[in-house]
Image (cartoon, rainbow, N blue to C red; front, side, top):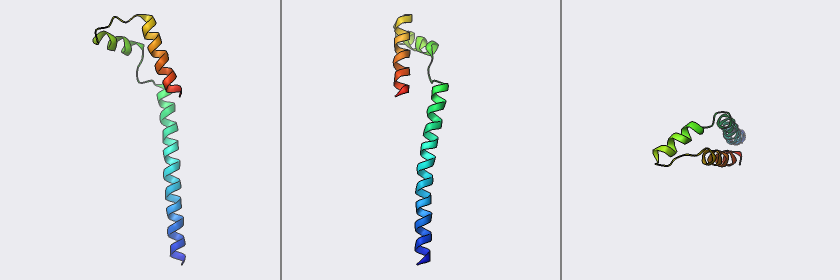
Length: 73
């Protein structure tokens, strides 16, 4: 009977550890991406030029604002 309790406690601790680790890793990754965005204005300008578009500052600002809003959600 004692072995069953030990197994149940170990299983509960494992599940709790995995869940807690997931949420900590997720929070850490979101903070990292907020501080170091994966794309900046220069990269966006280069990407638009490669696609054959002439990037205006207004269009770049609009796309950056859109990406920042998406990151905030």
